[in-house]
Length: 318
Length: 236
Picture (tube, helix red, strand yellow):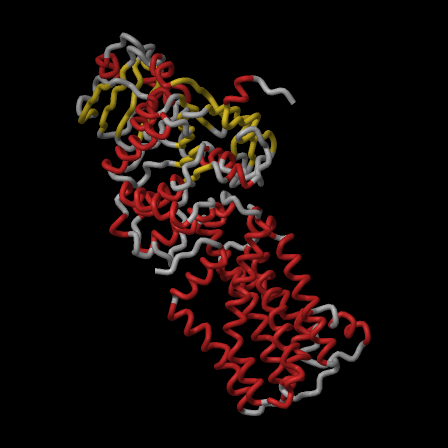
């Protein structure tokens, strides 16, 4: 079969990919094309299908319909496909009765590395990840952050062509996150493609070339990061810390308000281009002690998601 | 530090590192076998108890471990390895069966030392033990694929195991021809025969026939293990 030039360049192509679970959850009709060196972020609230999509792309789950082509083949069992994938799933699963180094050694050999090469790369990656001192400690004694870093080591050790990372910065400290961004930028420059599920808007804006917004299992918006951020140009995000519940309907009825959502005691409001935050306060007039704090800032990808769906992305935890 | 690059090496390394579990695993069958063998219990009862012991040792070990791995997310990670599920299951279960065999070996040695005259039954006893351990491991592995916890695995394994042991004629000698035919289709009946012979009881089959049956079940179980890899590792 003749393939077009774009297909030839794409390392991964997902076509109408669907995985339906009982209760209506899953992912539906996903289309994705991943070129060498491209970094794609998948963003969406909990339960939106991010992890399911990553599992499908990582060959850890089978689609109900549609297909994925990796490096030109759709054969999920082809060992040469899996050898070129580096996967970090949402669960930091390891053999807890073995040390970090033993775990990493096992996975390195599963992906075909020789003893010498495995030793050399693991030494470098353990040092990079800050796990050198804990390499001979049982993984069962590791913290979640250490387990996630070990996952990263195992995903990177065989130098895959595609990295599939589910919440890679989850449980990482700030230093760890910066190291990861730097590493992924370097890998991207050398041709490694990355798909990562994340709700860390700063990570996504710094690292990703393009973003898929997933909501209820479907892509509701996709595009390059600058292009998506342009949609918010001139808008403002207003965060109000309130002392008692606020009627969102009143706020949403304002022409100046594009979206509003409550998270705990904080109201997030996306104001339209040129709108004045004072208009919001005017609506809340008469309840002078209602607002205890107010912050106005430049909106980000999370705010675009809120604008599109009315649902806020969960705060990425460090 | 022991390093493991293959699935079977990893199983052995992890097992060897759990020293307390190792001691308990080795001591437990002996605690059952010593009073039976050294106390000269009637061979029919001793063979019954030891057949049950070997069947349960095989069935529970791998099933419980695989169920825990399913819960922890390790099964998902296996799916991303460049290894076919059939090969993965064969490596896992054969290693697990070998570990179980090591666990049972002191019992077999005890029987051989106490009844040296029944040496003609030793090859059949070894082979049928290996076959029952692998089949037990396979039953546990399949049960783990539809269980939510190690406790459930035990339940799903023991529920079919007990009637199968009954149908194998290990509790009461079977006299009806139809039941006799059924018992000859089950590996437990041959293990029971071999143990009866090795304990100087009165088996109904000759040693060579029991040996051949053990070999057949071992080969069949290995083939079935390869076929069930996807069922065990890729079912959600």
